Image (cartoon, rainbow, N blue to C red):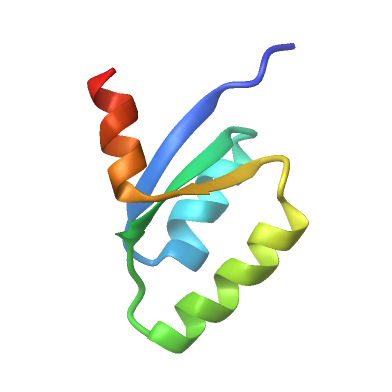
Length: 72
């Protein structure tokens, strides 16, 4: 079985975006500043456990790195 990767960006990171992509089994590449939530404290608190527990399935990259990869 091959693993698919998905770049993810969006709102309500801790609930909608991350849960959807991880639940579907994707290896998620989170573009660092392309996410938001309605509460900065909740947003920050939710990402650290995800990063620690799902390090094989979750990668965080800077926007500049994403753009460089996208341009080839």
